[in-house]
Length: 66
Image (cartoon, rainbow, N blue to C red; front, side, top):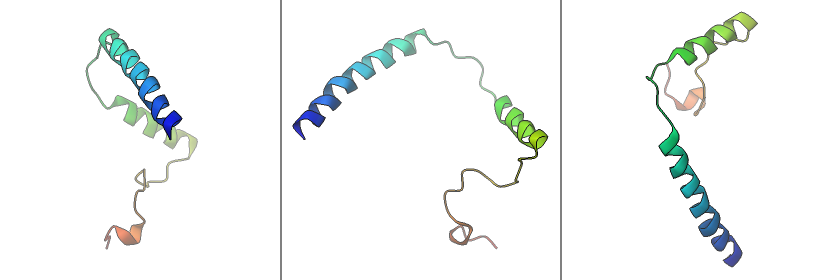
């Protein structure tokens, strides 16, 4: 457990510092959902559209569907 704890502290700190530095460089654009519509069209064009909602977190019997 000692090595694992040390790894988490050292590498977690390094990862946090790198993430904070990267966040300062990123410019956010306007938010939209165009990628969702494009993905849906791509599924339809390949014949892979199933009509199911994804991800399926619970089985249908657990979602109280009627």
